[in-house]
Length: 78
Image (cartoon, rainbow, N blue to C red; front, side, top):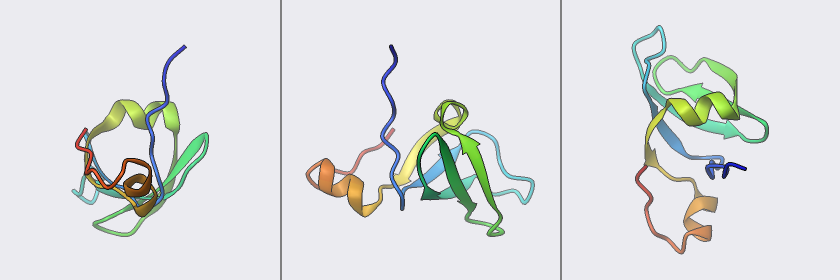
């Protein structure tokens, strides 16, 4: 059984592959089995399966307010 990477609304992610607009920074807009993302460059929104997204994350640029509350305010770099 694998553990689920905690991803929260408001997290800002850097992904391995850039969007066609050239930006690789994304804002998490919704979570669940699929994660709703918004491109920081062009504003395009899309949904990605959680399993695929977890493999594509290079690092967390910023964590959302819920992540800060659950980790005791510690900034998490991935």
